[in-house]
Length: 195
Image 1 (cartoon, rainbow, N blue to C red):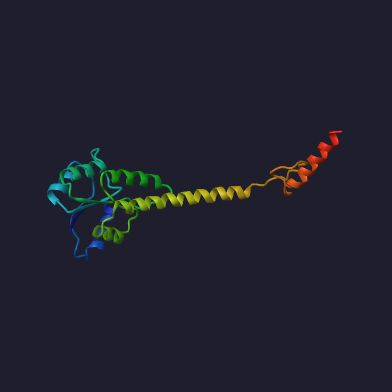
Image 2 (image 1 turned 30 degrees about the vertical axis):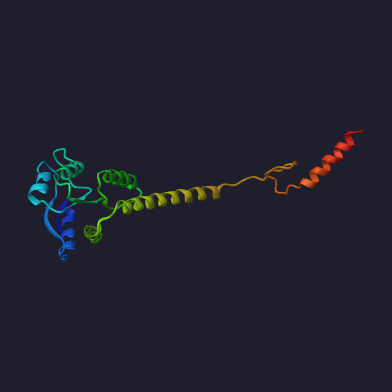
């Protein structure tokens, strides 16, 4: 499979080292900056089967990663795109979710949430499905909900309550409510006041 890497130069060597021993992957070229001729170079000059795009590619001339993806999909609709977001943490979880949702609307499901070159190589050979990325997004939300629940439980355990001294039956009373006793008192009162 012929691929082109669109990534900052800090990822180039690690990526090339990860794929060099894989006989199924051939790196045709590396584009390290997004500029006016990048899109044409990818589609016309390299014409790969697959484009691996890293999230933080330097952008020049006002051209964004989304512009490159749209151009590539228009010129080469059969070219597969693998998007490497990078490590997902609490600070960028919402950004990752928004990026993933946006890419899925474009039909891109190979969205990787780390910089592990071996995992990237694995996904190059075994594409992800929409279900795979949706399951990952749900697991991120589930972790967030669990963390929020733990915070609420901790806050509640820190609260203290004063005991209420009530002289009438109430829902908050520590004594059990005895309906027979109430009925007996009611009958006695009626008899007393009926004379």
